[in-house]
Length: 194
View 1 (tube, one colour):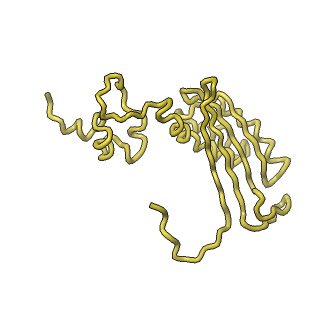
View 2 (cartoon, rainbow, N blue to C red):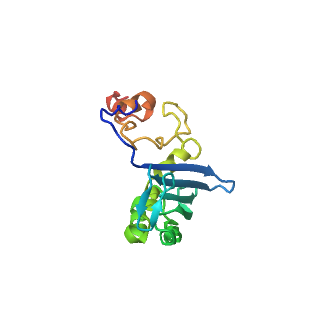
View 3 (cartoon, one colour):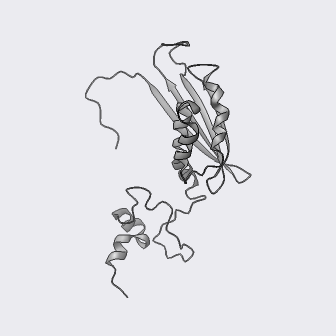
């Protein structure tokens, strides 16, 4: 269901776009390519000069290369449009500080510790924060087993990865009862002892 229609007249003032693409590489690693752009639908005056309507205020890219355990093995950052040319781009090499972090183990905390405030670019750092869930989506079905838990597949001894990671797929909820009954805490608590 889309958002409701506004009951007030509105004027577009800003557009931010975040795009993330995930690529499986032929060497067994994966690249997460993230891009953030900001546009104003008018000319804007900055301390560094005027940006004409249609010119990007920000066009920033971040690539994390990860292994199959979601460890960051390489990072590249690039700033193609910035509000302070010659200054904003200087921080790009510092994003290598993310190497060694794991996307599922305190990643966001590690990003904050290494690149918050004046130690990073606000927008690149913000974009890095959303990469763990993008990686999980990319890995789903390819690297992470997301099979239906209702099967009696003897090879599936562990609960599917996605369970208990969001409201809908909580193991004590109705969606798990319906789609993953084998892993349902609700069903297991009402089963009679054998």
